[in-house]
Image (cartoon, one colour):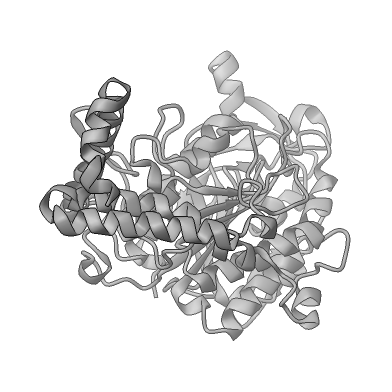
Length: 476
């Protein structure tokens, strides 16, 4: 046998000045550190610290900042006082001058209507999504950190505005593991290259195996995993070579079970890439879906085709056992998608692109019995001001009061929590900080945000830092 002539461990120690052995040792140390920390923190699926209400999350990220007062936070006084000037302690103005000033209130161009038995108010921007009002839990008292896109987007995804920290999906995968050994447990569909870029789905100091896998890009029309397509499916000869290597590994493990058991555990994570070549293309292929499903998601219509395909792909990944799926709607520009500083009517274009696909996703999940244990999370990095920016026709960034909504996964459907002031500028009741939202989402998946930690640089880190509280009022 090859191993009896030149054992693998001896080869690593002698070849190339022993650098192979050093690399293997570093890999093993990293794996051991994770195993110890994981046992001390969240445990396994069978021994979670809390009773989980959900198994996975689909995050519908609306990049750029959807205006809450034009979508889900109805403020009739905006119309009554339209055009009048009021003084606000605007975050950007405070950063520039240290004091607030007067701004002109601007009413919403869209009408609001009540939907469902719960009577939730939703604007004409989202008529299809509004049909699911009784499944949605709206958080109107959201507030966050960062007034610019970059810091606020990083805070949304990683719980920090500037320091390099693991993203939410990485923490979730670290705490729960994957449900499917043939696919990544964390996937980001069509992410942007800006405003945090890869850090929004990165693992930072967590072991690299917990980093999100990118599928497509914000400016790409194709949805592939790092250019992985059906043409990349292993050929029979490659399959035979892979099986031979596995047999050689197993022979060495049989001879040295104590010494190489750890190396075997580390190598399993690297085999995922091989298995993805066989299983990922099938998951990404939408051709097996019915014509009715394709129509429901709007994939046949130009304005909804791209986001419809992303949402349908998310449902397929959900069924395949992916833990955390980001479905991004944005672009690679400096002022991404929903960022209407001078042209608020552009919200209509973006709403038309996502409204039908989002409604289809909720319908599809519910019909298949998946909404019960899947959390659908919709939101932006912040909201927008109720007044006109520079006396024009747009709205500026507003991190002090905005709306996100949740559906499924044990959240109260048809419920509104919290509120902003009479004009929709600042959260004043039922306030939910982004740390609180992160903590509550982890709670629903059976993880205690205070226990889910990782030791790095001499201290224990967690997603919520030293903050965060469970918002029990929104749990069913």
